[in-house]
Length: 122
Image (cartoon, rainbow, N blue to C red; front, side):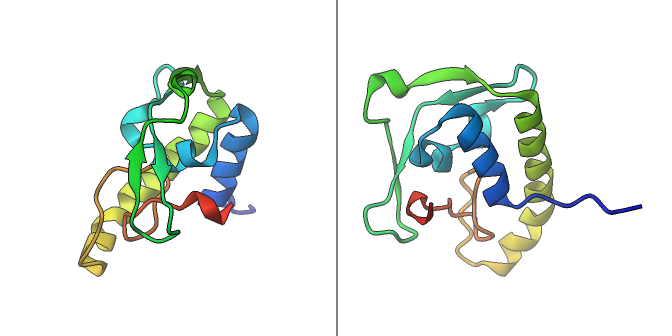
């Protein structure tokens, strides 16, 4: 039996990006509370602002009010994200002990130290 390949965060983000045309800052700002796994609906209310391309960032409203919305996510994408959540939940306790400055802010796409990925890497 061939083992199932675990998807990387980048592969999950790219799948979501292509399917639902989210802006990178909106995707990086996602928190687990923005996703409803029962209804497959995501809420966009913020974007990640990071002018200096470092770990310091700010969550701000999207540039236009039209960007604030709820939208359906494909069930296959939600399953990918749910698997990512399980992996993140499993590794979080260990990461909290490894990083004295662990940033526990509930980001969906975060580094091992809890800080969100920065959109400028895309």
